[in-house]
Length: 172
Image 1 (spheres, rainbow, N blue to C red):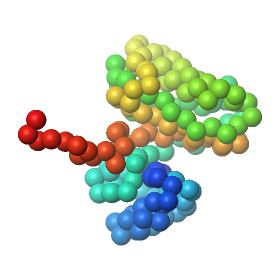
Image 2 (cartoon, rainbow, N blue to C red):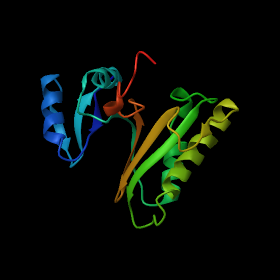
Image 3 (cartoon, rainbow, N blue to C red):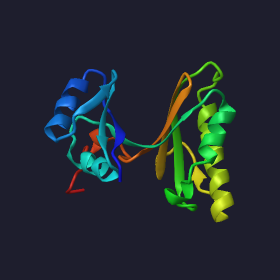
Image 4 (tube, helix red, strand yellow):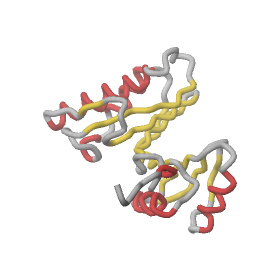
């Protein structure tokens, strides 16, 4: 599998520590923002990073990058992706997004368009559609859309990595 740009999120202020941690694990930083860095890796690397990072929240694997100028463009691009190869038609999905585009006035609308496109594609290809909701109990799809560029990621971490082992009482 070819190397992709994995986005790894963390708290603002922890990026330098996350960057050093990734570099020590053999993943040099390609780019960074206030709360994330990008490294190159395959899907298996995303899983490995989930097991080894201490300062990260989520490791996001890119599924599709595309030009997007309108919510209808978003729907068409998402509908065109082979979701049936990634998701179970009887599973659960949750959509989150970070959007900065003038056509979006309600931050929940892109989530709805992505969810509808995935459900329509799954229904057409498999005869069934996944359940959806705000709970991150199944696959979590993250949309980042700024200006005319959009990227869909699958969250390979599930629960934020900072919660690993949090207040687990082995004697309860």
